[in-house]
Image 1 (tube, rainbow, N blue to C red):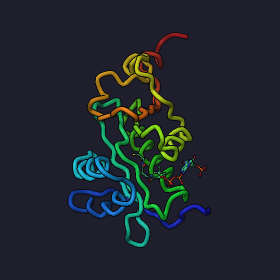
Image 2 (cartoon, rainbow, N blue to C red):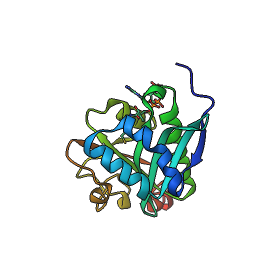
Image 3 (cartoon, helix red, strand yellow):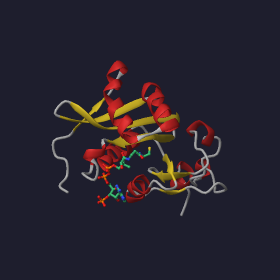
Image 4 (spheres, rainbow, N blue to C red):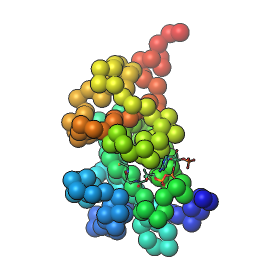
Length: 173
Ligand SMILES: CC(C)(COP(=O)(O)OP(=O)(O)OC[C@H]1O[C@@H](n2cnc3c(N)ncnc32)[C@H](O)[C@@H]1OP(=O)(O)O)[C@@H](O)C(=O)NCCC(=O)NCCS
């Protein structure tokens, strides 16, 4: 399908965030729906793709510590999928995190959520192992942050380093 040329990306602030609720109802069920709606109110930053005044896709972004960004939720209205909107919102999130000085970005998705996992993979994210070197040491291990990310069983934590680790960047060759 052709890309979605008309979508405008905007910030959703305060009560405006309710405009994204229909996308969440379209995208999540059960406990995830409840949690996504709650996160919509609480997330540090909410970005939306708007077409003809309607919110058709949304991303919820958080920074737990200055060097770590988290894509809490990314959702596109069912009839607007595979048009590039998810990727546009992900690129937007990565650019914003980069400008803000974030070093590592994480996102979680259910193991069977192929669309989401493939989207993150297509932008260089990879699964994070439970025992790997932590992000503070130059790896992607999310030490101390998994519970704040609320990663639960059956989900894959994906990570991507977007800025070199400070010590590794300055270490002599
Ligand atoms: C995951 C989601 C946000 C993707 O949004 P989207 O706008 O359809 O994705 P895009 O069109 O930008 O696709 C970008 C890439 O993601 C991957 N992708 C997207 N949908 C896919 C699918 N159904 N199957 C396999 N790969 C898929 C592809 O690599 C795709 O690139 P390509 O089109 O060049 O092959 C969307 O499917 C969605 O809202 N799902 C429900 C909510 C959800 O599960 N969110 C993630 C958990 S927070």
